[in-house]
Image 1 (cartoon, helix red, strand yellow):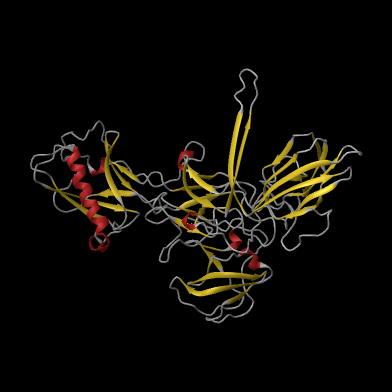
Image 2: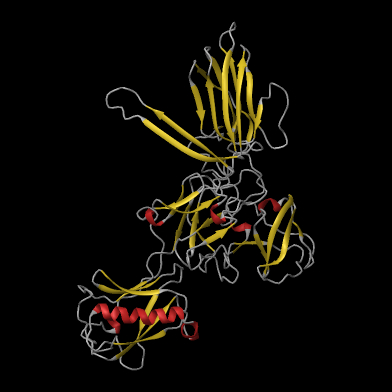
Length: 541
């Protein structure tokens, strides 16, 4: 896909004027660059129209699908009237009923008019924005809130298997009316429910995953059966087919992997609907993980790495540690003959924790410490244990080993180590505060890029909800938030009414013609497939 680059510089010689420099870059699929010589009668220069309905005749003008940039410039010596005809969006349905009144201005010789995208329409409502209202209902998509996605504490899903009724109004579900054999690859749905689906989605019936290969009609889509190693089975008529948001086969729920990567062809099923308005509102996306907490402090203070622990030299000490609610594993450390500092103790504990993490036989025989990273470190003068997963269940719990010499005694302290009863209560995982900790939350920039604290982590497609992140929080349960299914959502397309309809112009002088140049970059795309964002591609804009 080609790139369009915009650079605009404005300034003056007025004292103190710092001027303005603006630059931008977008993906585009085509360019329209044409010079029109017009008389005193209005001429329609271009029309934004749906695919397959491009129109004919000089009054229709050049058809475009979804302009990402539009510039009309008067390159002659005659002033012109410029008319913009936006669609009119209605509150009841968020669907345009007709072309609104024309917006007029004049362009004198050398002047130009720029529209950054074709997302331009009138909105007949007060008190709220078209980016908030969800199909006039003022319910599901209006109030932006964080929604847990596919974790054990989420009432709207079971292990990341989402039913569309959890996110849509009107009771729309993806179901079928007759029994489908285990080797059949065409799924028939009730009503127009196949419109919820995009090619590339992973859907589930029972324990079988199916990869959607194409959406062939409003009531049918084709699939690859038994996807990701699952077993294909007959599908009884009238049952529900759900969408699977789990990242990898074998995952017990929806989470990032051990490298902080995640990819799915839907943003928690939000933005999927059977008819326009659909999609996600650019600039409204936020994602946060259960990245906070999951620590256990010893409740000490004023320590440094060189502080003497007061423990006995060359002695075995034991305690138990449990993470994520699993069975506790025994940690055994042998103090050095000479180095009894806090730094030495932390190093010995970390070595034992790493042995659980790396050794499947040791880590999973009676605990879940295998491949669950736990660290021991000095933080603000205290010894702190940290579970580095970001799950709703993430936490660290310390207890006595009930064998050998206890590091955390019941009545007499071992050196400076606290008594077991004096250790503060563990701090479970939580999400960052949406107002005070925004540097720990992923936000989109309106162009499909997901960033946190200025660093890029992934992309999202506003039409389908396909999104991916990499190198973010590891093994993380997530909360998702966005506005969706409203007049500002999804792509700007000619077969919808969320856009400028046409541009017209004429010379304001009956006796002299005018010359106008129109430059437009088109980004018309087929939306039948979820534009997967894996590998740095896709990414919307």
